[in-house]
Amino acid sequence: MRKRWIIGGIGLALLLGGVYTGYWFWLARTVQENLALWVDQQRTMGYGFSYAAAEPGGYPFSIRVALSRVEIDSSSGQSPWRLSTASKILSIAPWAPLSIRIVDGDESAPCNARWVAGGRDYALSMDGMDLAIRLSSDGALPAIRLSGRSAAVTEEGRQILGLSQPSGSVDFFAAQSDTQSSAQFQLSAHGADFAPPSDPTVVETSDLLVAGQVKGPMPLAPLPDALAAWSSAGGHVELTQFNANWEAATTVSGDGTVALDRRLQPVGAFSAVVRGYNEAVDAAVAGGVMTPAQGTAVKLWLNARAEKDERGLKVKLPLTIQDGFVSMGPIKLAQVPRIAWE
Image 1: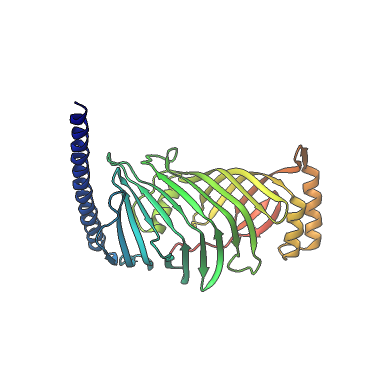
Image 2: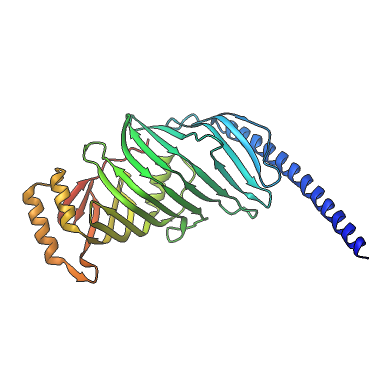
């Protein structure tokens, strides 16, 4: 009797193994065919798309398709842009076929994006990219997760933003009005260096976190037209949380709202709690953002509004973005670079 159970168990294991193997090969072929079909669809929409794909591997724990020499170009009529990478791995777990990951293979290769805006050349490069896309069987919009070891944005070859260990997530929704969310996002980095295009001063921050929701539906159109329609219909961004540490002892946290004006430039109002504000003013004076006299006046104004708790002095401030400047009450702190959307 016992021998029958053993033989039966072995037979069942062989049967299940054969079924799983057949499922794996069927799913691997389906992934390969769907990738080619998706690329053909993008080409018919006018996008340039070239790549080389190896035969699927990774049995039994994953389906892995090695991609190489990937280049994606914008369609005609759009501002020119290009995505490229020397190699990546498209990976799918057989038990979660609607979750797609794109990661490095045995050798790390940066993922690069280049585009033109306002007649100037921009580039984004990310090392150690790990991109996860979760699809839905009921037609719901996808959820995206992205992380990397580092990322950098350059303008005309000059770095204007550097990020250490960046990560982000976006969940998309079908919004019908400006009171509903079309996207929920969170962005973070362990370190960020920002150098405004027209300013040689580099602002260094650590433990950067921004989270919020995009309110209102975003129409399908070229980016400037889509943003104009979204904004005129009441679309805006609600920042539910932002935190940043910079210099030696300065921290900023709070929330607020950002929208676009008629020129599609950002305007916003925030409520912020600042600690280590004297150090921030000293750094602004040292960096030439404000004169020593302005720095003294700002310190007096801040100290008059300060409160004390168990962590020390803090000040609650209204921050605004308007007319191209970030202002703290009546004091202009910095100029916001103009955003060229096309």
